[in-house]
Length: 301
Image (cartoon, rainbow, N blue to C red):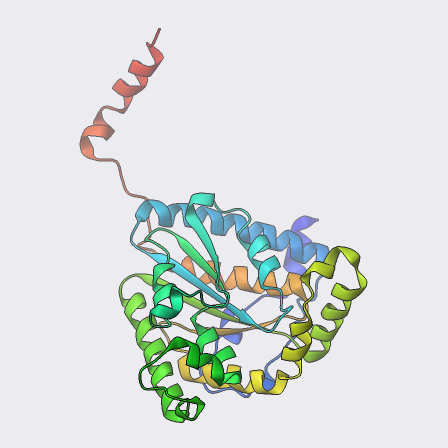
């Protein structure tokens, strides 16, 4: 019966979510129908994340690749819960989650990419970044006066935060991602595409449910009023930086279980193609003496 349910679920082609040409963000879907019940989607996610966990164990032993998972999306798009559910079956030593907030005083004394370099995953590990280096061309573009806090020598006023400034910043981000990709980091960038109506519904739930009140901030409503500007900035950022070595994926995020399942599938289906990722073999001396070592342990008094 379980297999029949699995067969009835709509098959995902990850290429349908990858951004390979310029997009109009308003035409990108915020909902995707898997043609399955929510409980079946959740069961399917469990199967995929177990396979992901095993794959990560192999990657850790292999020790030559790392994976950077970048999650971006409007407030309430489901980043936190996606991280919790997709990476639940990972060995704790193999995944590190970073959440980038407002830059600290120390971070502002360095260039804007410095703190992101520091948090890159080591070889063999997954790094999951909840909000990413793209905040530096999203929030700061919506609020350009934030750039003044970076104390960049060439920026004297907001007037200097012009098109040429953003062109340079996008070039720097593309160079950053190209550099880490060439050195063994597999980069995934997920845009959790939430509709404005669904964000309204989720904000209302935060207000109506006492146990969720703590998640609400009045600032959420201020940023919501800038929805169109954020969408414009997301569209430009995605169009300028979706590259073969660091692709963006549009993830319809109005339904959280579906979004999690899609992300998990994209990760697994992509990574399983790295057929050179294998657990190392024992050295010849150890392999020859395996029975001897077993005997030694069994003979212990």
